[in-house]
Amino acid sequence: MEKTFIVTVWEKEHWVVARCSEVDVTGQGFTRKEALDNLREALKLHFDHLRATAVPKIRTIEIESVPRSAL
Image (cartoon, rainbow, N blue to C red):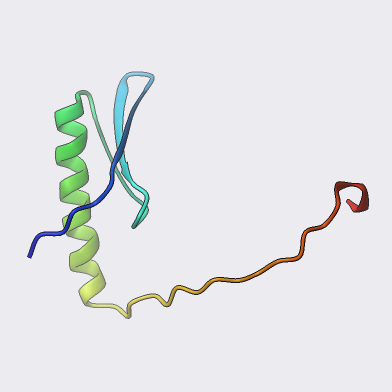
């Protein structure tokens, strides 16, 4: 089964970094292709690992704004 993810790619010093923020997984390489290939491999490992563990529960919370003057 294939799944599509949104990936952000940027250069940092001598590296190209590819990050999937949806699952907080990152790959890097010296080229864009290498970074994306490494990210694909990291995502496969990430999801293989999740099969053996409980799926995290995601919730939302609300917070009350605190005026800067109160800090």
